[in-house]
Amino acid sequence: MSDVQVTVAFKRGTSYATIFFFAFLLALAIAACGSESSPRGELGANQELLKSCDPAAPPASFVQIDGTGSSNSDAIAAERMTAVEAVARRTAVCSGYLRVVVFSSSSAATIILFDGPLKMDGATENARLKRVPEAITNVMNKVRSAYTPAVQALPQSGSDITAQLRLAAEWKQQLGGDYRLDLTVLSDGFQNIGVDLGARALNKQEAELLAQQPAVPKLSGASVVIAGLGRVAEGAPPSAVVEGLVSYYTKLCQRTEAGTCAAVSDYATATR
Image (cartoon, rainbow, N blue to C red; front, side, top):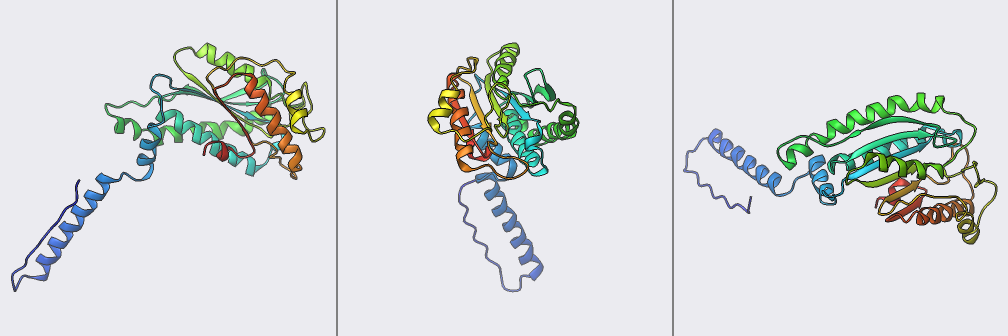
């Protein structure tokens, strides 16, 4: 609604009740104009998010959560659930497909927490977006309730993070369609299967040289985020160790020929 100019003239003797009634109607009109011109709240945020979607290539969002004990704390689990919710919301707004798993020592040592399409029904854009909050609540209820039992059921013999890239490539191929892979790995980064990344601090050159060794799949056009690097349940590794992890996983991701790569300590950093 465009700007509104309202002029009200009252005759002498007009009752206060009448004046109050007109003032009430005027307040309602102003509120209505404001709500039409600037959508706010969750619907408005989802409308903005929708602008970033590519209808020709909806996201195949794959979230892989490291279930090994080194990052087993309530604070880290809460951070990871926040990241999962953000991915789920983007997937639902963009009418994509979501899979969430917990992993440990290999690509075979994985447990699915959620797997399914997040395409909202509705005749209009807003009708579909209004269904997003309920859909996300349902997803997160399933993920949260299944998370702890899944972690407890996984072998704790080690963490094979590199293998998750191959698992993601296989899943995307099986899913088919025009989806674009949107991979998020939530892990402290301390892989000890095949290569021990926690043995000592690696400088950038050493880390990149080490990242040349593992076999990696082709993830052409994919978006890859590896977040939580160095975030452990007890203590904090030296910054040099974390920098080595960032260099290692950045190079490892680049070798997959992914469209975008981000290796960070904080998931929020990768989404700014």
